Length: 114
Image (cartoon, rainbow, N blue to C red):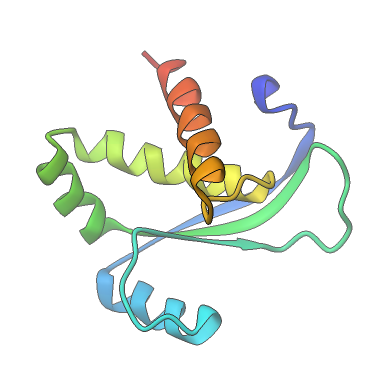
């Protein structure tokens, strides 16, 4: 976590099926579709280097996407986990430049495990 400059906090990862993540997405974000990962920032006091959050991951989508992209399910799930943590750290994927920065950071962090 040194590379992310994290000093503390709490994370929970919740693995669900497509039906459940669609329900969560609809309830909290008003999006009526299944998605791969949802991130909820639960930090009540913003403090540099501290994250508090819950990351909800669709295990079904990870299996499908892993098969589609020719990677292991483990690799796909790790990508979702990293993606969620980056959202908690302020990375955004709602613009072309934000997507580019986020993908670069994901790639950098995932390469550390190899």
